[in-house]
Length: 268
Image (cartoon, rainbow, N blue to C red; front, side, top):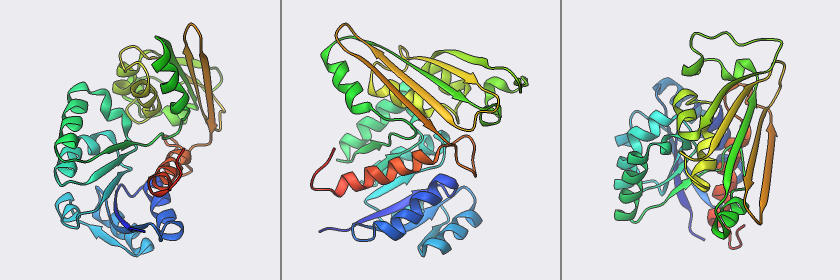
C-alpha cells in the first residue's frame, strides 16, 4: 500500500491533536513531514514532539512536495496559501471552511484545483450529517437553517461583539441572518454554518442564529432541512477544546476520520 506524505499548517490545539494521532495511529498509511505555524517557536515545539520538521515558511513546506497539506489555522491563513499549495500540485484538507463563503476565493480555488489535478477536502469539523443533507438536496428544493449555542466566553472576541458585554445570567441571541453575514461577524466561531451552507443551499440562503448561553459547557449546533417530502434534523453537542474555547476537539477528529477514509478500501 502506498504511503502518503502530510504537512500541517497550524500548531494550536487542533493541529496538535491531528499531528499526535497521525504520528501514533496512522503511520502505516501516512508520513508526517512537518509543521508550519505563524510562530516558528510554536512549530518547533510541536515538531519536536512529533519527530518531524518545523517549517519556517510555506515555501520550505512546499519544497517537500507533500501529498496533502492539512490546514488547522484560520480563514486568513487558508485564503493566503490555498492557491499556492494547489499550484504545487498538493491536495488540501481544510478546517477553516468559513473562508469559502467568499465566492471569488471559492471560484479561484476550484479553478486552480481543477487545473492542477488536485482536490480540496472540506473537513466536516464540529458538525456532520452532510451525506443525508446533500442527498435530500438532490431530491427537491429545501430550506436550511442552523442554530448555534455557545457560552459567552466561547463567543468572546468576535468582531460583532467588540463593544458588547454578554450577559452572564440570561440567554441572548447575538446574531440572526445568513451564513455569509455570520462568518464575517463571527470568523472564529461559525465555520460550521458555512460548511452546512456549502453542502446545501449556499451561504446567502442558509439561515443562521447564534445564541449566547451562560453556564453552557459545550458548543451545540442544530441543523434543520425542510423540504416537501423530507425533513432532516442534525444535532451536535460537543465540549470545546480546553486550549481554545472557540474550537471543538471534534473538528480535529473529523480530519482523522477523513484521512482514514482516503486510504480505506471501503468508505462511508
